[in-house]
Length: 56
Image (cartoon, rainbow, N blue to C red):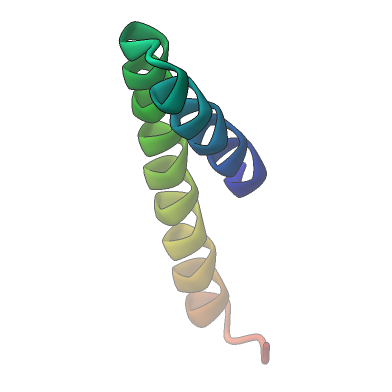
């Protein structure tokens, strides 16, 4: 999921350079949403591992 966030971020940067504001803002929004979903899932997995008592 982090890969897709980076892909949409790169698309947003390229679209911004060429002056496509709508595409750039949409891609940046998608990248931001995917990044936050990744962070939330990462924290959930860390908490689940800590609760289960397994070593990393």
